[in-house]
Every structure is written in structure tokens, then in C-alpha cells.
Image 1 (cartoon, one colour):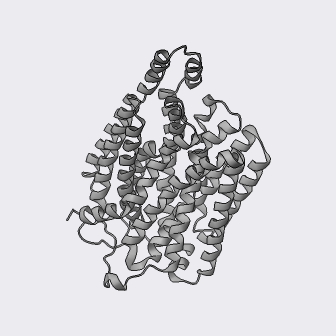
Image 2 (cartoon, rainbow, N blue to C red):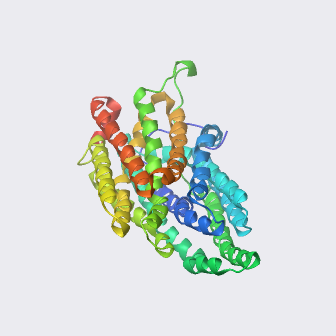
Image 3 (cartoon, rainbow, N blue to C red):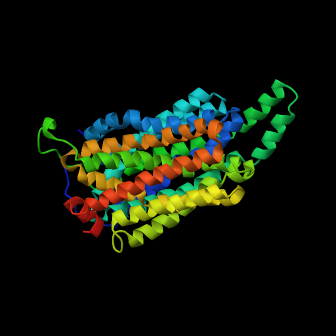
Length: 429
């Protein structure tokens, strides 16, 4: 067994662990929020259509479905703290593999690197979110996770801009040179030079992740574990409210990925240039950052979690309907503003499900991470629907339906308000 062998009570551990975790979320934001510009990049580098380009989030998020329970088994062996360090090391390996394969224009290898990166992130998710949840009172868990989200989204705003400026400073010129190429050799030379620009930045990113893995082992963080089950496995069942929450996380992650990573393709469909769509992910994340700021002030001090979640879903529906009525940059701006609606959904639902699971918190954490595979499914459904129904209808239809489901879940939460777990989280206890 690893260093976190004993369960530690949910006390207050001061600001230092939260600051370390915030720094960690900032670092991993550079990895997790590069998929948006990467979709644009691989479309050009490998000559792909929407379905092929959206293999990027498919491989990335499908790892959550495949690796969640193995990752939880590893986390039981290493402890939450040790699992976080191991996850960072695996992520460093996947990042390095991805960059090297892209530099050699080998798309299957690049997708394999993303799968390894996703496996590392799976282990990170089953350890770091429960770890942050256990750092204080359950009623304040949404606020703590929101603070982590702020650090992650600040990094996510910066990362696509840095990636675009380092790797795709003249993507429009590259497309023009490819179109003007007179033979296959000239075209191959243009693509090789374009793809090689990825290698050095990804080597640097892998080094940062590896240093973070080593540094975290010496950061003096408290040893925390999920509560040990108090009854035999055959007698333990997750409550229905926990299962419903897992399903909502599946829907929500699909919505978040569509708004953050799919906005580039949507922007192209709305007539924006390749040079412009490189930065659209940063706009969505900027809106999410504003949403976190509002949410940390309002939830749960001034507004219960169910009411705030319902309001967020309603805002998402309104923005989708307005986007459907507009064209061009106006419609794209509405999609970017969905980040404002999305911001507090995960901070509300994740700790709620984790605490509702009772003795099955380990299983709930794994299922919640498996639900992140919604980020693999929804973009592929969107890409497949573009041909039959069109870009805008496919995007708006999927997003609106998803927000309706999340809003319905918020109403169900209100019906469960008398339950001690829900009541405590909603009141800020």
C-alpha cells in the first residue's frame, strides 16, 4: 500500500494544500484545454473532415470510460496523494508520445498518445477531485472545486493562445501553400514543417508534468483517503440519486467539450476564418472563468445548489436559442457565452453525488470519471449529424436537449431537498 493508508477525517487543513492543488490544476489545464485548437490543427496537418478530427476528443475522453475502475484500484494501492503523482507521470508520457507522433505525421500514434494522456487524467480525476472534496466541510466542497476550476480555466484561456501562436501562427498561409502545391513532394514538405512545430512545445509540457509529479511527492500534503466501506460489498448499493447524478455528469461533460472544443468547427461553419477560430476555446473558457467567479460568491451562501443549477441550465437554453436565430460572429459569441452557464455545473454535481453515495464513495468516484466519456460521445454524434441536418441545427439541437436534461435534474434535486445530504450541500453547512 502507498503512503495514504488510513482514512483522515474531513477537517480543515489550511490554505497551503488548496494552493498546491490550485497550482496543479493550473498546470494540467495546459494539457486538458488544448483539444480545441488541436482539432483545427489535425484537420490541416492530416487533411481530415469533422469525423476524423473529432477523433481527438474521442480518444482523449474514451480513456475515462475504459480506465476509471482500474484507476480506482491503483488509487486504493497508492492512496489519493500518491495516485496524483503517478497520474502526472503517466500524463507526461502521453504528452511526449503525442508530440513525437504528430511531428512524424503518424495520426494513429498521435491518437495513442492522447489515449495514454487520457489514462493519466483518469487516474488524476479519481484522486484529485475526491482529495479536494475531503479537504474541508462537505457543504463547502462546491466552492473548493470551483476554485480549482478557476485555476484550470485561467490556464485553459492561456494554453490555446500560446499553442496557436507557437504552432499555428500562419495557419491560413499553410492552407494557401497546400492549395498552391504543384506536386505531392511539395505538399509533403509544407505539412512536415507545419507538424514539426508541435514537437518542442509538447516536449516542454511533458517535462513540466514530470517535474510536477516529483515536486508533489515533497509538498507535505495531508494524507487523505475515501472512507472505508462499513458493510460487505454485496449489501452496498448506491442510491438512485447518485446514479442519476452520474448520468447528468455524462451529459454535462459532453456539453462542456462541445462549447470548449467544438466551437472552432462551429465557428468555421459560421464563416469565421481559420486564423480566428484558433482562439475561440479561450473565449469559452473566459466565460467559464467569469461563471466560477459568480458561483463562488453565490453558492451556497446566497443560493442553493439546485436553484443555481436550474438557473445555469436555463441560461444555456436561452443562449442556444439566441445562437440559433443568429449567423456569423453573433451566433459564435452566444456559444462562447455558454461557458458562463457551464461553470458551476460540475462543482455542484460532483461533490453532491460523491456524498450521496455514502459507503460507495470509491465506486461513485470511478463512475463519475467514467461519465467524463460524454466528452467523447457528444462531439462524435455532432460530427455525424452535420451532413444530414447541417452544422447549426446539429450543434444547437444537441446542446439544447442536454441543458433540458440538466434542468430536469435540478428540479429533481429540489424534490430531494429534504434529504440530509442534499440539504447540507445546498445550505452551506
